[in-house]
Image (cartoon, rainbow, N blue to C red):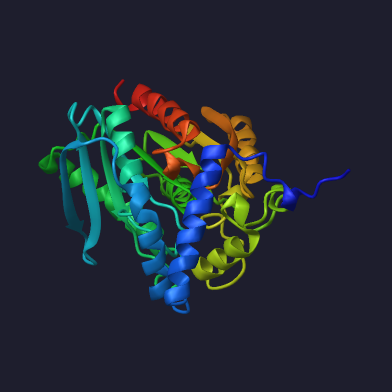
Length: 319
């Protein structure tokens, strides 16, 4: 008997499956009260759905909010109990450039801080569709400049800087590095890319892992790109990093979810980075879906992935 890729449910890690079911049920319940017919309402629902998953986890020695730049971009600093370490990770949350925030991803940032022994700065970059490409990239670059100039005043170590994020945040991390490289400006010392969105063109994994039971759907990804770009696609490699020449980038760690429509884009990126002479670490997590890291409170798979990335980051930032 043949099995349609869209009907498979036993290939997802059971704990990750529970995460998807709970967040899906919570979204449906909130949408039934007041449908997400506006972007404001959709963001409200997304924040409420993810709030329970952002709680708990490591306690920090210090957490504080800062603002910088002429637009008053917000960022949250987490310094772990072990201290700020020798380097700092700037983390960019996912959400299709359209939803989520440093609040929805707060636990992830604290997990990285605790596991690496380094400070983490979470950036609340401008969201689309109000602020389309390349505004978010400009916010990331402003954050890097602020960290290098003023970070020490906030107890941050600026000798080594990593830039990373999940999904849309992974896209922004890689694209920022490409922009800096092309302008001949200082690069981050490492890039952390968690199931990054890298291209508007679908790959075969779009068909294998489409559907709500895999968290991210092809329709959602299409709508996110339109929100970010104002159109379905573009030839700009800073929006679609898989179009770019990848030579000259710093070391990259890729966390790849097996059961994700973006899987093939990420494995393709790993191969192209290696071919370009970039030091690359790529790990595919069996049974993991898009957003699975946020299930760390119940998922051993998410815990392993966070620890793998943190060990890799610590080896660079604390060297």
